[in-house]
Image (cartoon, rainbow, N blue to C red; front, side, top):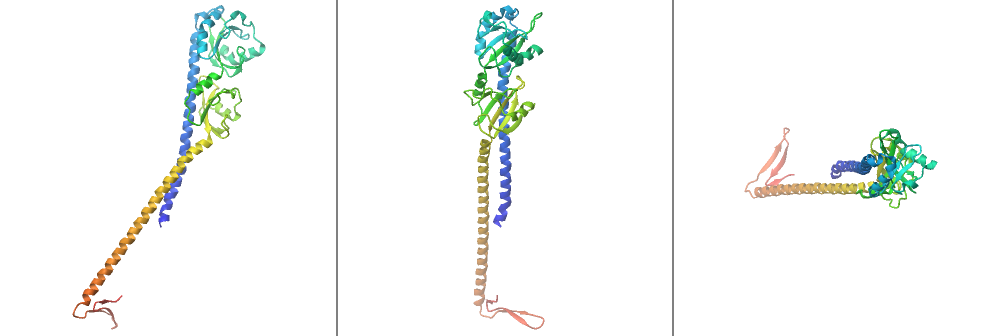
Length: 351
């Protein structure tokens, strides 16, 4: 009976443990999505601040005359170094002739024309700025002004009566790693910034930059195509197989996304810690209830035994009193057919 009474409790405890496991995973995934959202907000904020600064610089009077671009570069070079990059003033396409470059600050020695490959790279990275007149953030490309893969944030320079020019801030992807490194990521969680052509720009655990420019897995493409946040499971970038990814697209760099991910095994291990606590707690409760049922049953049996002993003692006392009387006392059961049955005589009770 005790086991039967405990079976529903044990079944409920098992159901509660499974439900708690699923809820814990849901909370873990929600935390992962919140991490991706926070890191994406930090990246957007940094890019947005650069865009705002570049737009203000593009209105400088020193850029009214293309001949003054070198003087502009001289003045603005300290700011470019502060943000970890360099500034280039570019002429209109298709030449994209550099009018000034804070990397060299030697306007007369800048090439009048760029190699075809360099012009193609600039056209792909900056072409939309000249076409739309809006700021743009490039994907990773081999820039003609620095011997390394670079990213650019570019704004237009518009003056009445003059062809559109552009002001570009170039910077290495390493500055994005520095941004990721400043984020307080939960233990076991990594973050990566990936551009629209599925190339890694930075990964929070990649201090040496081994993953810069590495192709991200193709199965990440649905996350870039989705306009909302998403979760997906797949191999990690430097963290082994079977990771849970949460992705957040950037608003300042359309096509870019931030992925926060952690190993599924770590999630399961954390969840099973909670499961073990629930199982131990359920066992302790069941054991306590079992002990309580056993104790109550023992107490009931003890009370029944005490009552039976009291009845026997009472009967013995009645027999003792009747046996001491100076007369015979008897009790017979008379039946209609004339027969009788002796029930009691002289203090003796028939059982």
